[in-house]
Image 1 (cartoon, rainbow, N blue to C red):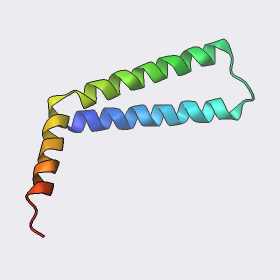
Image 2 (image 1 turned 135 degrees about the vertical axis):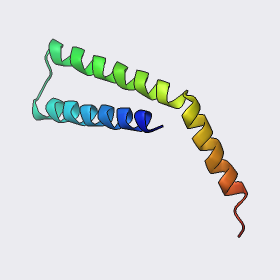
Image 3 (image 1 turned 90 degrees about the vertical axis):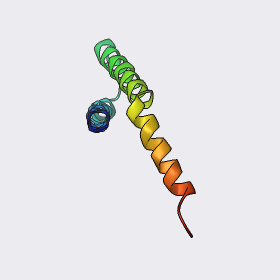
Image 4 (image 1 turned 120 degrees about the vertical axis):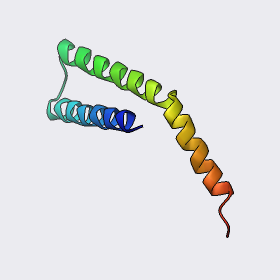
Length: 72
C-alpha cells in the first residue's frame, strides 16, 4: 500500500508543478499542451492502478469493518 500512496504523492507533486508552470504564462504552446496531456494521462493511469489494486480494496474493507464494529 505504501508504493501506491507514494506514487500518488509523486503524481500530485508533478501535477502541482505543471499547474504552476501553466498559470505563470498567458497561454500555452503546443508542446506545453502535449506535456499537460501526458501528465493527465499518467495521473489517470496511476490513479486507476491504485484504486483497482487489492491493497485499496482491503484497506477500504478494513475501514468499513472497523466503523461498523465500533461500540458507541
